[in-house]
Structure formats: structure tokens, C-alpha cells
Length: 321
Image (cartoon, rainbow, N blue to C red; front, top):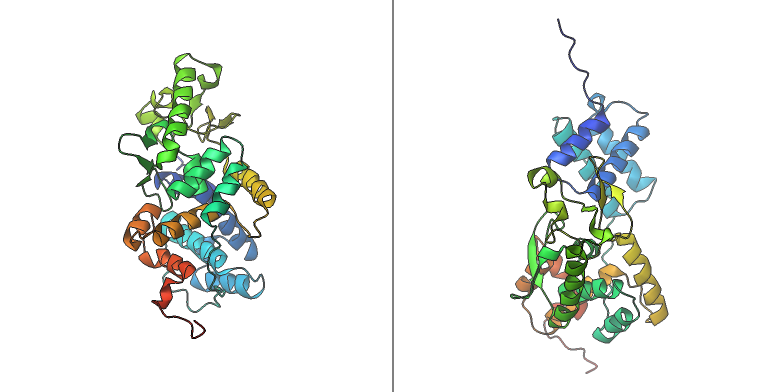
């Protein structure tokens, strides 16, 4: 009689489900962080020995004792819901009333057009072009870094964002001033690739399972990163590949430029996206169009930018004049 194969450890089960559902590496790291935190809080008990009461206790402790932000508490809850429903096949159901971290009502920081262009002008390449895409197309920093040669449609002046937040694809604007810089960048990549430059002898990293489905894609021109990293790394299967420019490298350079510009605002990469939305609304674009370009599922998320503009007051004027 054959001995049944041992059941995979929780970490392996978790990673397998993450891959099957095509979650991003960032989501995998974040979810596992909270799952591990939850297990340590309960002295490494197996999650199947626990349930809604233990989850409730953990989330309440995060809010009361650790004073986490509302978004952080929600992130922990999402990770645990994923663990129980997707990995363990034991949905949590009702976890009862937890002490919820308070979500402060904050209006996002936005830049004026001149402030945005001032900061962008202080950036070196390719960070300057990446920041221009964040401001001109409303891209998140990770979306800009992940662009490939095939994602730019010069004829229709459209940028396709692949696997954005929520693993959704969308189209957004290709600003006219960026057409020529992007054409030149693509031409340089094409030239180096066709001449078999040493830089392109290594495969570009590909999404899950695509390497096996399209074995030649990793070396094709269309799948090359627009903003490749200078170094190499190993993918999930142990293959040495070239990934895109790391998000943290762009964030670091943008922070330096913001300080150098001395604009007096706590701006970051995401501020360019906020400014994109605000400028479109200020110039008369309708909110549904802006929602589509940003990739927001709910229009209420986009409506925060009407508060930035002051449009929420429907033309009411101060008695002072």
C-alpha cells in the first residue's frame, strides 16, 4: 500500500493559490506578512484550529494596541479572508464587530501644472519620462515601470495598462508631448535588440505561466520592458531574467526632486496621478471619463477630486465676496 504524499506546508499551499489566481508579487508579500503576523499573535496555532473569534481579536488588537491606519487594518483583513476562503477552503463568515481603525477624511495633495513640470524637469532620464507618464497619463508608478514595448499604440495615441490594480487592464491617454520621446526610446531598444546587444541576451521576465505558453515571447521585441532594470534576477522558476526598473528607485529620485524644487508640499510619485485627475476635471472632462482613465471601479473614489477643486459646493459663494 502506497504511503500518501505529505500535505504541502501552509506557505507552499498559499504560494500555489497565489500563482493559480495570478496575484502580483507585491500582493503575495503583503498577504503573507499579515498571515504570518496573525499566526505569531496566536502563538503559531494552525489557522484551522482558529476562526472568526481569533480573527476578530487580532484585528481589534491592531486598532487598539498597534494604532494602525484603517487601510492597514483592511489589508490585514483581506489577507486573512484570502487565507481562509482560497487557501484553506474554510470561509470565515461573520467575524462579528471589531474595533475599526478610524479613517481620517483627508483630501489628497495635488500640484499645480507649473509645480508638476518643475519637479519633472529636475529628474534625470529615464525617471523624467516615467514621471511624465504618471502626470500625463494618470499611471501609478508601478504601472509606468511595468510598461512594455507592445503597450504603446502611437497610431491611436493610447497606452494599455496590463494587470493594473485589481489585476485589471485598461487604456489611457498617450500625451502628444511624449510621443517623440517614447518613439526614440523604442527605437533605441529595437536597435540594441536587433543588433543582439549583450543587454538583451537575457530573457525579459514574463507573467505567470506565459513563459511556458509562449516560449519565445521572453526574447521578442514586443515583450521587452520600456524601462528595464540594469541588473538581473531569478524568477519564480529559477530562470535568470531581466525585470523592469524597481519602483523604489523611481520613488527615491522623485523625493529628491521634490525637495530640490522646494514647493512646500509633501509630494510623491502618486501625487502626479492625483494631479492628472484634478487637472482633467478642472479643464472640463466629465467624471466618468476620468474614472475610466484612472481605472477606478467605483466613481466615489474619483469624486474625491471634486473636493480638491471645491466643486462640491455647487457654486456657493462666500458672503465676503
